[in-house]
Image (cartoon, rainbow, N blue to C red; front, side, top):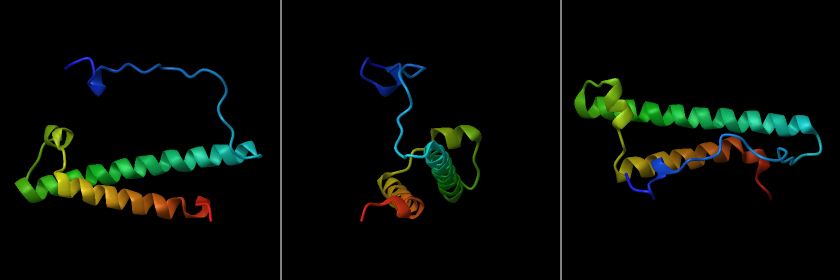
Length: 98
């Protein structure tokens, strides 16, 4: 692993300053944070499910290591990107500027 690889980058564990505010009502900021965190988790679970399905189609059986090591091919990544964009569009449709 070289110095420029993403695995060698160390990010700070704490943030400085105050959390940014985007809405007049702080509870709206909290709600949007919740929605975006939940959306991220759903997207990650969807990609993991996609990995499981692709591995099962390809091999018929799998191990946890197979799932962790799996990287989709170019077509698979394109399908995931298309799904993710459509998903975010559905979730954030009320927040898209007109």
